[in-house]
Amino acid sequence: MRLRKKPWIDQAIRDLEGECVFMHGPEGYKGKWHEMFPGKKICVEIGSGKGRFIIGMAGLCPEKAFIGIENESGVAYYPASAVKDGNIGNLRMICANAENITDWFDAGEIEELYLNFSDPWPKVRHVKRRLTHSRFLEKYKIVLKKGGVLRFKTDNRGLFDFSLEEFKECGLKVGAISYDFHNSGYENPVWTEYEEKFSLLGEPINYCEVIF
Image 1 (spheres, helix red, strand yellow):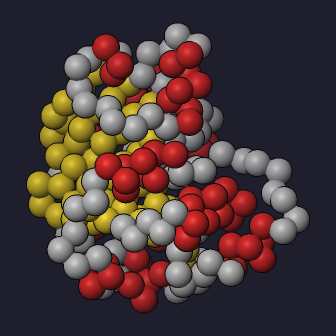
Image 2 (cartoon, helix red, strand yellow):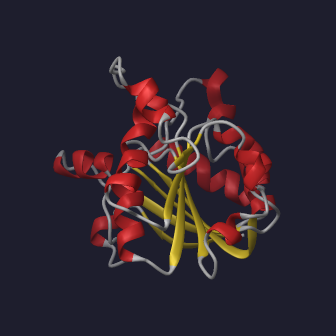
């Protein structure tokens, strides 16, 4: 998601550093997230955008801790500010590139991972940037605990089919799967911004759960 950055936003997000968002040094929390959120399952969303999904999930599931990863500071500011304004104790943001996820989380530290409407990177030369490419899946294998779940939603059928092949090649088990998620009967407590947009256009949503 790319938005025109407001001139005040760089300072505004820096003011939230260390309290609601981690922009510098998130590797210092590796292996310590359960100390920050004692007794809670650690759940991560990569590409949180303006945060509708992760904020909603944090409210619905107080027994879990949610950490959103968003590379664009002009976008990450919004869920980070919501943490402070709404006093959301079980949500934090990391504003950095998800390629470094193994620097921030210890082996098996994450129990649930969400990929919602990730950039499809349609050009062949960009295929390795897809968050479901094998090079990312190998990183998820490290940080997700045994039996942990990746939940993946996308409107892009090409990306979905590519991802299913990558899961298979990496020896991962696909559990729940649907090519029309909203008519599948699977639980869907919080819609993302993109999910609402594409659904209103009549686009079917693809969904799967991958067991690690």
